[in-house]
Length: 43
Image 1 (cartoon, rainbow, N blue to C red):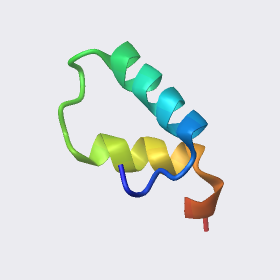
Image 2 (tube, rainbow, N blue to C red):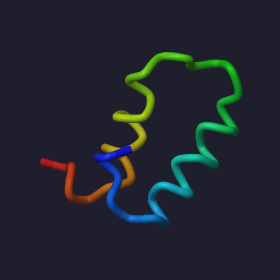
Image 3 (tube, rainbow, N blue to C red):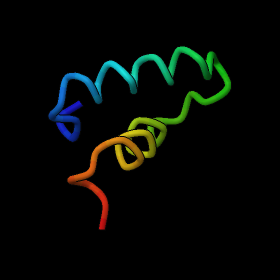
């Protein structure tokens, strides 16, 4: 949660997680989604 600064990005992340359902229960999913959505995390 701390890696996602933008509320819109957090909302999109939540919608993506809901669409995944129970397919991914791994904690890395948050970081993966954040890296895709948050421009600050891209290198």
